[in-house]
Length: 269
Image 1 (tube, one colour):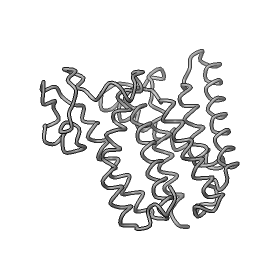
Image 2 (cartoon, rainbow, N blue to C red):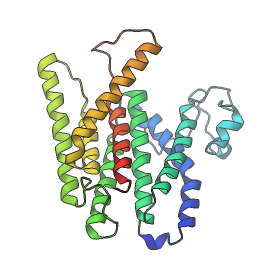
Image 3 (cartoon, rainbow, N blue to C red):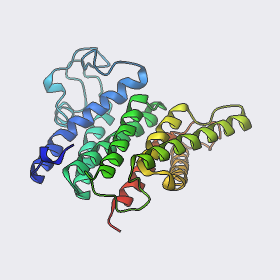
C-alpha cells in the first residue's frame, strides 16, 4: 500500500486495530467454506445447525460470540470456538505487525502475510486442506514485498538472506516447490503412498518466495520439529501410540515455522 495513503502512524494503528477482528472473522469464513468446496461469497453467513441467515448483530467480531455465549441465538447451536480464536489471533498479529514497525506499506504487508499464514495453518489443522486461493494470495504478497524492496518503495530487510529482488523471491518459490515435490515423489516411491499433498507443494512455493532459497533448509527443519512435537503432544493427550500412517498437518507446521523465521529475520541485526 502506498505510504501517502496512510501518512499518520496513528491512523494506521487505529485502522489495523479496527479491521483486524473483521479480517479474522472473514478468515474464519474462508476456513469453514473453502475446504468444503463452497463459495466464500454466497450464500450469506448462516448457522450450520439451523441454516438461519445471520444478521448484523450475529456477525460483530468478538462481541457477538461473547454476548451469545458461543451459541446461535436462533437455535442455541454451539458455534465452534475457533471462530473467536481467529478474530483474536488476527488482532494479535496486527499488533505484532505494528510492533515490528517500518513504513505503512511494510506494516500492512506484514499484517497480510501473517493473516494469510494464520488462515492456511488453521485450514490444514482442521481439514488437512490448503486452499489454492490462500496459497496464491500469500505468493502474491511475498512477490509484492520483494518487488517493493527492489523498486525502493520499502527498505531492504535486515537479514541478508531474505529476498531483496523479484528474481530472488521467484527463485526461492521455485526451489521450495521443487524440494517438496522431490520429497513427495521420493516418499511415494519408497512407501507406495503419498506422505505430502499437492497443497503442501503449492504452499511451499509461497513460503519460498517469502523467505528466499537460503532459508529453506531452516524452514524444513523447524517445521519437521514442530510437526513431531505436535504429534507427540497429540499422542500423549489421547493416550495413543505414534503411527507412521497417521496424517499430520505438516502445512500448519510449515506456516508456523515460516512466521517464526520471518519475524526473527525482520528484527534488526
